[in-house]
Image (cartoon, rainbow, N blue to C red):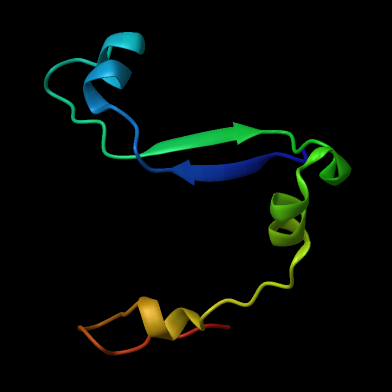
Amino acid sequence: MGLMAHPMGGYDPDKARATFAIPAAYTPMAMIAVGHPGPVDSLEEEYRELETAARTRKPLGECFFEGGWGIPVKTA
């Protein structure tokens, strides 16, 4: 599908509740934008460098546990 998701901070939970008619029994705790990426060359230089920089990720076992706290999740 070519979609990307981007979590956002700094949103207003009350405004989100009003805009999307979220019932009072629910608390908006995260905001995620989902859409198709635009062309990288349309970004300002600073953001283009960030977007095209090499990325590394921590091993899952550093952040996710199973069977107890601190026991790394088993991967493949």
